[in-house]
Length: 307
Length: 251
Image (cartoon, rainbow over the protein chains, first blue to last red):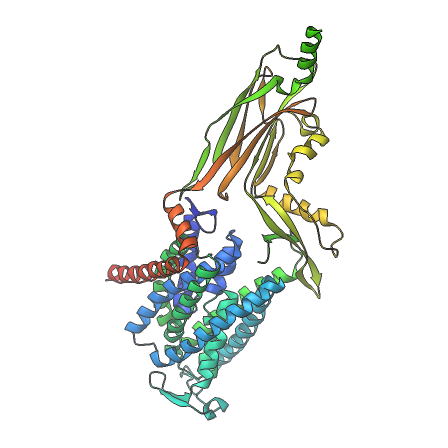
């Protein structure tokens, strides 16, 4: 069934959109990532204008993360205090990110820089996570199945001022690292049109030393507010939020997220991490190939004056 | 003397000797939520107050153009192993949709001089004033624009697609694709004799979003903050609602 999207001004098969939303929703629930880094390129492939894809994706992430957060809140796996600190950083970062985005747009190379930052960030994060979780898996096997939880070491992170107690995470650390993580993720979400979970989740685990159990819920909590902010920025400045597209994606996405959350709680943390790492690397590889291989059409059309 | 004058007048006014009378299967296209393209039948007759001339070839050309807008065409080049947009040419005005239908191959139905005057063929319908000095082959950018749009059925050249019967009745059909831009679609019908335009008829077909589509579009343009907040509210409500429904379903 074809449906006409009023803002994107294209006709797309409604079931294709529902399916895409559902598929990405499952991943979103499983890993606590918004799924934007997957959905945004997928929307490009089915012919949605990039500006609309990025803005609408932000709106859709709000919805799919919302049901995810509800599920985590019920299970008490959200560190609200940590989430709020990350959020303060995130909103600042998103505002900064929009300024950077507009500056790049004026230079006419925003498309390439977005793609390159995807490849670089996905490559680094995916690679590190993959190696780390492989090592963890091997250690668990060697120790005869004993859970490897001895990772809370004292690093430079614990020697910074403005310490705060995060009871749910069982941490007593400075607020500076989570604030910086928030700012960084906020910038990325504004520039790359993603929630930023794929950066935030590893940062929370490896940098802040948060237990894997609360990481997913807390990152979803932060993502909701940052992407809501991004949605409003796009809607008021670029007029590119397509609500019909968003609703179709999120109907599939919300159901997918519920299924994903259930799968996620049944799996071991190490298995989850290695799967996420593999997924991140696959997307990274695909984007890298697009940049390296000779494209079928070397010309492209864009609205005058950018994008 | 008077007789000579009359004859002279008749000879001097061959332009209005034949005129187009037009019918359209529809003069507006409504884009609804389930819009997936539309066919428009353009038909008409040639009105004349004298016997049909058989000393020259009569042909009909129909040109349908969507609203024009400026467009940037970019070309990628390999820089340090990566494909990067390097050159860009700004096309001042390119129609979002363009279809040319003719009753004979355009080469015979239309002289180049007349094309230059009336801008009938696709390359003429695209207006590109200046390419930057750094780009040597600006034409290939316009060609790429035509190639990409033609691939999406947005630019169509349909030669021999106009049926012309007895040099009097004509009809042609244009298939509008699903991804239409709204606005007035300028429709021109040219009557040519030996490639010279002898009459032009012009009208517009209005392509508009209607109903919910129209309302959402207008709201997003006129009250973007309200639209943004509404989008968020709908998204959150749907997210919460579907989650609640899913839980009920699980029990």
